[in-house]
Length: 379
Image 1 (cartoon, rainbow, N blue to C red):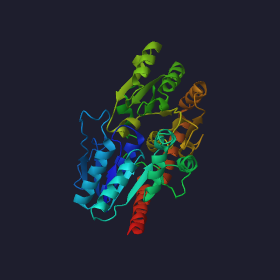
Image 2 (image 1 turned 120 degrees about the vertical axis):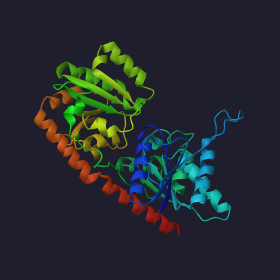
Image 3 (image 1 turned 135 degrees about the horizontal axis):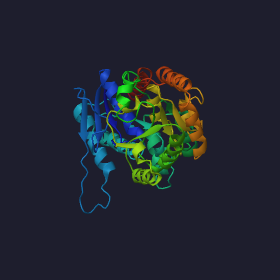
Image 4 (image 1 turned 45 degrees about the vertical axis):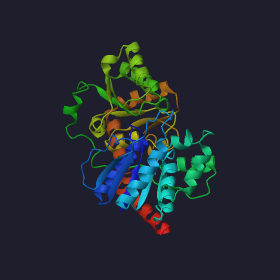
């Protein structure tokens, strides 16, 4: 198949999943065309069947806010026509599904075939942006006009149906991880030495540092942990809350124990040396960072929200707590990090769960089958 993929190219879960999906599809001999304003941050392959098409947005003075959605629709239509795409797959409803709908109409109006498009819902496009009264009607319309709709968790599917009163089917296809790439580092002790001493634990957090990730809770939890257990904190990613986290770290006097790595292209190498993932988010529709850690035999300490309980089996493959209960999360972390046997057993169970339920070898065929069904209905 020839598939056009559009996503936000930044350090968020939707862009990561879309990019990884495209690379996995290319490995299975599909032709993949990424269409976005910037090359996705994790698009680090040079396979000949992966192509990137930049969307050029005009900065004409008339526009206070350049119309990216219109420029994107135009580029989608151009790429689809030039490269004879079979379908478009857009990640995050606003504005991508609207742009795909316009591209489909443009091609049909010019006497071309009807180009189907699939929309994958990732979370805040439904729970935050989509529920804004300014966007709710167009979000609902674009979802219902999609030729196929998927959601990354049962939680998000039910939330979509409820909030938007959607009548059409929404299929759950979970996020995934490449279990061959994300795995425990066989030379873990050697690489751990870059960040911690031999007798120290490594806690890790991976996100886009938005307020919903509650970065201040990450710092508070670690501060309590490091008083009881010799440890270091590795923070991967960047975003609006990074400066707040840096200020908190300095105020607490723990800057020598915290590593801000910024955006990283090969996060599996960093996750593979950690002992515990911290994910105290206000809301997660799935929790991709936790899954990536689990595949590396790193259990996650996360909040019991959204789709997270669909990923983490509390007490078996990770630990769950209530949002904002920093003291409880710190106690759980201290207890787990102080018990080597329990920590390693939980890590091994976490990897088994990732392999059996969320490995790319299981999930990518689900997307391929979904594409085929969409194309059959559209023909």
